[in-house]
Amino acid sequence: MATQGRAAQLNNLVAGSGVMSAHGNVAMAPNRALNGRVTVNLTSTVVGGAVGVPLVVGGTLESPDVTLSRNALLGAALGAVGEPRAGSSGKLGDRLGEGLKGLLGK
Image 1 (cartoon, rainbow, N blue to C red):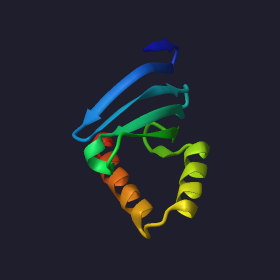
Image 2 (spheres, rainbow, N blue to C red):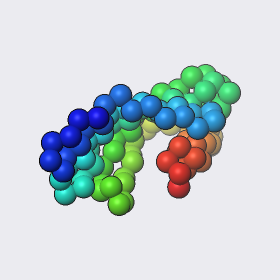
Image 3 (cartoon, helix red, strand yellow):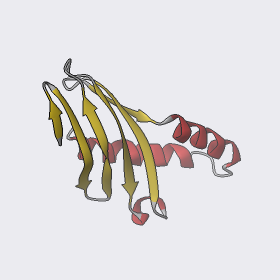
Image 4 (cartoon, rainbow, N blue to C red):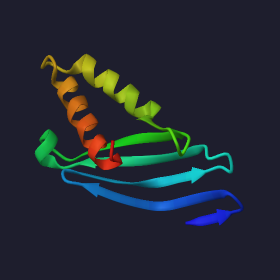
């Protein structure tokens, strides 16, 4: 962790919760705005193979916002187009959402 005044840079963050782990870097501006990237890794037992999901961290310290990166959104859209099994991407999304609740404490 590096600080400069009221700004902070958190590097090499690592967290884990059951079937998930995450690592990344997040910066907090003096106005408490967040900016960063985190990769969430799901174990093979959850999705049938190891999966890393890149996320973008934004919002504020009081109200953080975590979303898929643009590349992940594009990959998900392309995967859904080529996916022969109906509903499989939704199941993965549900599992990811539940895992993030545990990882982020919400």
